[in-house]
Image (cartoon, rainbow, N blue to C red):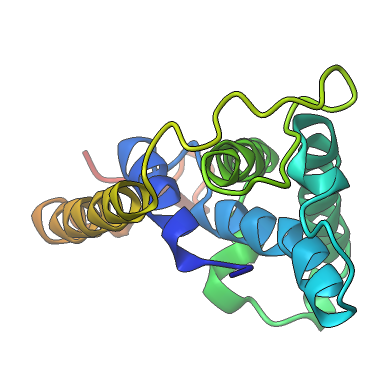
Length: 180
């Protein structure tokens, strides 16, 4: 099934481990964008379903597209809504989130789809196929997502973001600094 939410579990875990360095939003966007390819081939009844974007080379292009879409959106940000806080994301967290999204997507799909050729054009082999059973793979992705979600929730409760403290600078203008 394209655009499966099972891919989001590992992304939530990566974001939980490095929330200011890896954008979960970019991770999800990259996973959804990469699965437009098999969705198109499913709708048009063309096989194989997993082609160019489901290779590490093609996935690199998808990650670059996510970064470029973010940059283009930032250029138009006054005209676009700030859904999920995307406007405040920096280039590095978006790039890392997109890269983690596409490469983990190819790796996970390589474990379960026989029409995958992840190392194309260097090789048409898929040495990862069936290395892990589908129930174990889905269960692991689901459990990682649950644990990461609980961890992220705990972080928000235990360490809430501090509000900026307004003080006057030496020039008499408001100076915004984070309280320590």
